[in-house]
Length: 270
Image 1 (cartoon, rainbow, N blue to C red):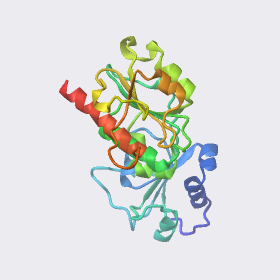
Image 2: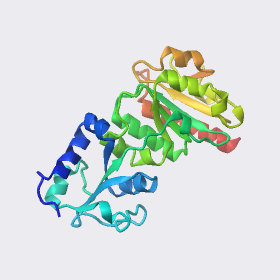
Image 3: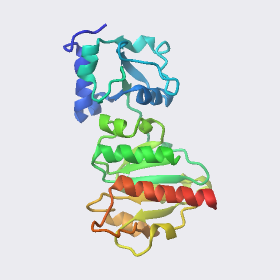
Image 4: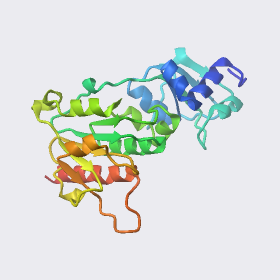
């Protein structure tokens, strides 16, 4: 059992939590909590370490963590050490140090009528996490962060997504590369390119008038700038969400939820 916060492994965990540079250099990340660790392992994430505090950990049937299967990477820590590492308000007694899974655009596997989300320029980890949570709930087929400013493996992304980072096909790429991929028929089942529905303020068309059946990509930009010019030029169906109060835009995670579930509604009722 590790009982000292000066232990090299504990110091590394803290660095991985706090510094994007450390995550980039090592290719590792940290996930905390039964749900997050369970979903990461279930998705095929390779664990480098699993740290557990027996005094705090309780098994969860809905989100199991097979400790026996990962005995070779299992390390027990004291409650004091765990609390030093924990960044959640309520400690669940288990932390994963995992190897980041890099997913390329070219490796995305899409069904016949895919629903894809594209998010350009997102900076706030909480927004990324909230988007991923919605994407999982709506069973979105892929999420692409174009020109993302936030680190996808930031602990706050994992926490805000409730571990949904691991349940989805998620990738990052530059905007230009994403557009090339989107507009290449060979990347889509049957060569049927998707309709691009882009959230925009500069249009009169309401989102519920757009056809979101069949292959569809929903594109969103940042709250202050919106989508960049290349996306606005490409969008066959720019749409807006009616804003009837004093503010002119919603949080991007809220916009994603509204349009995504409109797509779900159309697909379920068509």
